[in-house]
Image 1 (cartoon, rainbow, N blue to C red):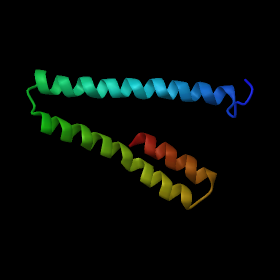
Image 2: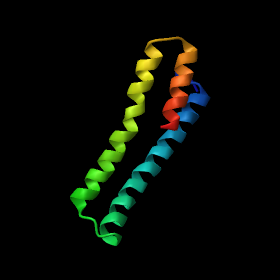
Image 3: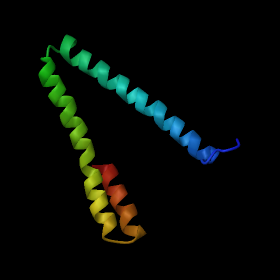
Image 4: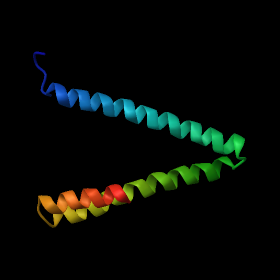
Length: 86
């Protein structure tokens, strides 16, 4: 493709990532509906639960960034592996 700055593999990866993020967004919406209508949990509580889950998912990135800044590539791979287990 003329004028394209990204290789085909990168475009494919980004397209797949976009599809995955769309799926995640749909799951969160249906989780909210399920918890409220089926389980009877109030909407503000459901919102707090989903926000807490999102915030907890961000915590490993701070740990990985701190460890990988302090060392070489082996530290970075160890940090990413540890974050995936959290």
